[in-house]
Length: 275
Ligand code: G3P
Ligand code: CA
Image (cartoon, protein in one colour):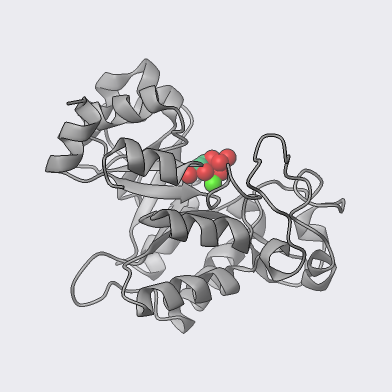
């Protein structure tokens, strides 16, 4: 029996679909999130940015050039302008042979509001789906991203954990300041501090104020597996991104991480013996 299999039987690792099932369908589209749900993902990951007219949309890059047929920065475009673009046909059919471009809502720009609706619908149908929302470049907006985000979560009643069970939503960021704002306004929302490298002041396993969960990149896990142990010893859960290859899933399982963020939820769940 592999380490991954053994670990799963003792403590199931949460499998989070990174930008949806983004290997199989264009990232951050309804098509990618529906596919992730169909594949059995425990949670969905998304990045959020503000449009020029104040809507939160799920787009990773500062500009829309890579993932749509348009050009320009999200922050300089209105929602109506983004809604006129196609976020699906850039996806390489050779790399993702199952991807069948469908124009319309499935490949339009995805608002956070629409994604929250999907999460609420799925949960109402009895599946405890969770959502991990990453605030992108929040410092530029001096608190507006967090303010809009919390407002939406409250409207959908996703800002507090249910009587039983974990919070349906967690907030992630590379910005400690962003997480601090979230924690100050909504202390029960779990926060994940994303790390590309380990800064010297955090080497002992501490996290910045406002952060509850550690989110190291895979590069950290590969090069400093002992750091994961330190985080665990300091009492933190560890969510690793972005883990796609079987040997890296195996490593994460061996180290006992609590969650894996992946573009390939179906393959990871299968490797972990979940499906
Ligand atoms: O889940 C965290 C991960 O998404 C951070 O990196 O660039 O994919 O947003 P990025
Ligand atoms: Ca992200």
